[in-house]
Image 1: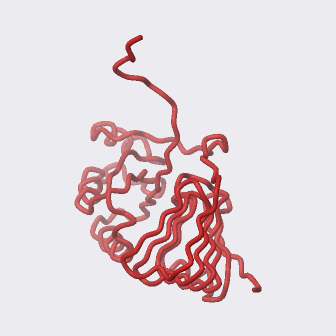
Image 2: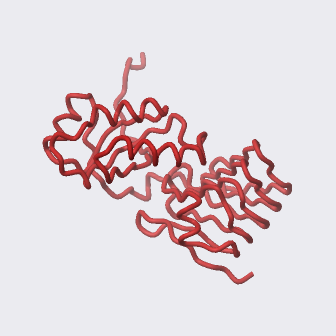
Length: 221
């Protein structure tokens, strides 16, 4: 039997949500550029849902925001939380109207193995553990990236970037003997340096998701 030329199937993807809290595109651009400078590769080509629940101006320049994101090589796939006037703009711009919802646990690909790396991960290097947890015995240096579909355990210092739950596993955690990273992310929710300084010390700790927010728990090793 010949396979049909197209098939429509349900699936699940992890998308980052960009919350816009100010109408000034200049201010948004300045803050966005600051964050992109910290982790450019993490955001490069990233599909985003833009949350506009804080914007009440019906004449908000959504087209300008879209152009701003495209100029930074970000991809806006839809908006959420917008009033009707802005939602109409989104439709005219070909953007989807996304309703927030909870992810079903059955849609998450759970890790089946553990990848162990016994070495220092240096600047420019990347380690990815597909469908598994990742254990690093050594330091993750500045400019290095460690990524896992499951959890990440670092028996040493985390100074670079760590992204756990890359396939959408919200139960993943990041644990390190010393936490001083440039960026941490779990299932698309991330903290940059300023967030970490506000919530975490440089001591050993565990970063996990509670709802849609990252949290930090100190560990006694």
